Length: 157
Ligand SMILES: [Zn+2]
Image (cartoon, rainbow, N blue to C red; front, side, top):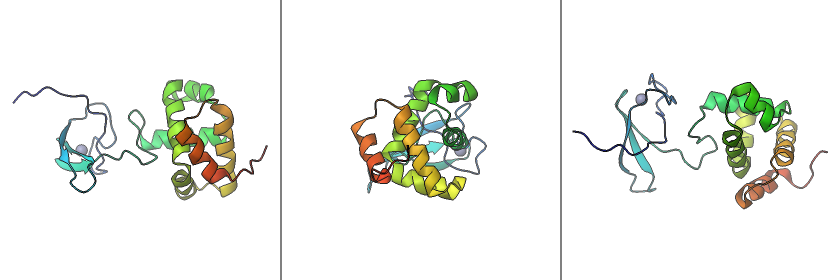
């Protein structure tokens, strides 16, 4: 049956799937919503698995995979600005800017993630955030609130 395809902006969330977090070649359809949370449910035709959108988590990113996000975090820790990250990774500055904004908004969760996954120290996290703040001149109010929550106003210069 041919049905018009809306643009699906998620990637498969099943780590076993060949198309796990892959944009190219994905075959995903919308499949109802969760009654409890109202989140969109999706179905990957490759691995025949249902999954929920992960919107609202720091790593929900349309164009970036988790490993790309991890790389970008590493570049940030090394104090590369959006412009040089653009050069290194080939991702558009706007994509990186949106990621920064998203990360800032969920800074507290991101901290946990950075510490656990990347092995950053809390001090390195602080540095990362102050760098994000310096780098992104315009942050959404939500992102500013998120940053305030983790930065405690004591920003190392
Ligand atoms: Zn899949």
